[in-house]
Image (cartoon, rainbow, N blue to C red; front, top):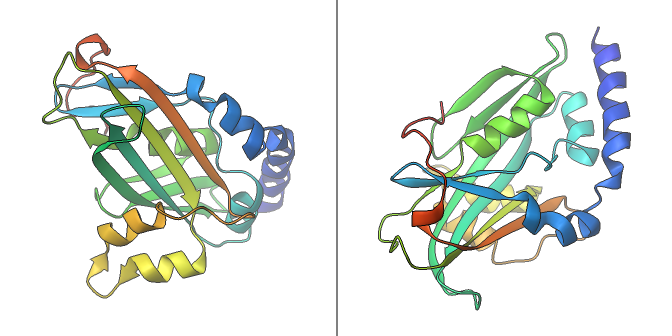
Length: 204
């Protein structure tokens, strides 16, 4: 049963190979949508697929894959940072059940028994950044960064005390490696007063 799952997912990864990073980054801005629950900003990007390529191969081999994410609010197009919200996502795959599991290190959420598409959707739906202090009528910009962690980055972020938020932020201050899967999506200008409202606490 595990072999059939590997074959099925491998075919999907080949089909999605066309979403190579340079092409995707060029088109990404139009794929990020933002909503507001009265406290936090939430995002959706249904055309973003990151469980592909090397990360997917590692999952099929039974290894967990760590992704680092960061949401950043900017006050202007020049990149004046208002707030950042980093997160560490650990994805694993049960070859017998053919299901994915996702664990968030900072927000302490987890999703289990997920299909591939559901795992990708769960990750985005459960990421959020506080909008506290934002003027409802003032324009702002939002960027979402995601990258598969390499061993050096893991050692700089994970230690005895737990997850280093400062370490996560520093990871995104450096460019990803040439062979390191990474994605960056942006939206703006946005205004809180114009955003669609979602139910508070709806991340699940």
